[in-house]
Image (cartoon, rainbow, N blue to C red; front, top):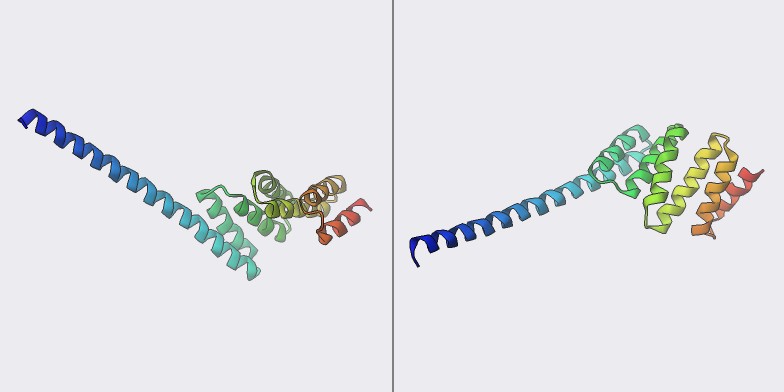
Length: 152
């Protein structure tokens, strides 16, 4: 090999190394990114279980900043709802119901959306949300009871 060929070969190897290092950094970064969102969700869940809905809200918002997941939206809606801020909870439940692929999360989000509308005395919207929940989970007795209450 002459000097020019060695340089080309060396440059090619360095380029491959650089691409591999860059790919590794991206993979590690996205992995850490996801762990942080999961960790924030866990902290939020612990605060929620303790009845500290304000702290739960903060952690669910952090999780959403890291990863725009339906579960985080749903949990955030619940934490806000528990603080009596029904108007603010509604868009979170709508977003969770509209973006989740998990039928359980969707049904629960519609159920809680119905509850939020019920609390605001927007009974027509409440009825529609409960019906949407029952389309997904037709055997849910709590939703059936709430639908019946909202229809009265």
